[in-house]
Image (cartoon, rainbow, N blue to C red; front, side, top):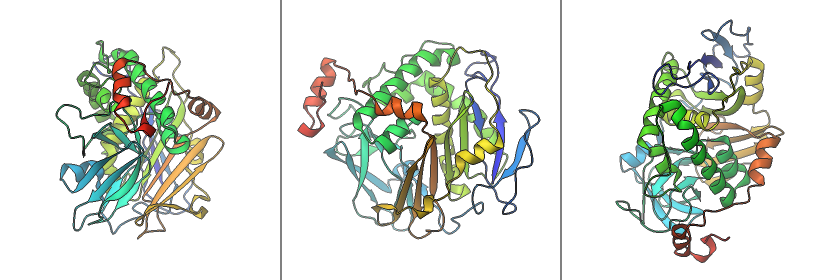
Length: 390
């Protein structure tokens, strides 16, 4: 079931770090099942009201017998190790714990190594997994050497993930490194241009030790402070309930992303990371249009979330513990992972906007690279198959 709440972050800087209604219309998808087959019972009368629960799955906690750690938590506890392979498209990951399953989400960023990477698929990593391969893309263009204070052989944890639907589409559907680089570059430029409208001060997210890094861009202190305040305002809406298993959000009147999990505990562990990505994406899409976007209807939300037929597709197997399915439709792309021990329930389902505009923009990315001397020198240190080409 989905409880939908409209969050209004008002005003042209009523307070520092507050955004415009036009910037972000968030749909909190909180999803507890009271009665199978319950129907939506109308639309909200105002932005303060919530819509009755809407059925999107069989029940609230579908996976009740397993408590997953996230990748960030596990790396923070030194229970998971992510190693550099000197291959941009693949890393090695290992769960060192004797009794904890770890959930890795596609789009998670790991920091350091030869280049910051994002991971391509979800992965359920069992205890004592041994080293396992995991697909990756670079989210830092050109560097191929140790960054000061970091290891070139292994990665450190990050609380960041991909922030835009275009980045997610490039990684999960197009699966092309040049498209990923182009979308990362676009988002960094948009953050630099738009963040001052939120924070009230000039920000250059590329002014750091590695200007091409999405990770370091999101670590910019002024930007991070603004993201944190906005994220906390949104999280406060979710904390009113204990049965929230996901979030869907719209930006400028258009549904762009939904993340639904197998239980409320897993969502709670990922909540802040998801909301921060949502806020960052909203900032990249900030416009000067004064028209308040229309509200998303319950019917639109249900249509966006539905995953009929997805479970009938033959899964791929990123590892023995994980099943992965994906489907692209006329205006959406749907991705789902399942724990092999709980095949009747999705561990995670991601739905992203993938209309003709998104597909054309990402698939036609020319992969135009920064031709600075630093970029080219870094590239030449990479293996031949990973070097940037003009």
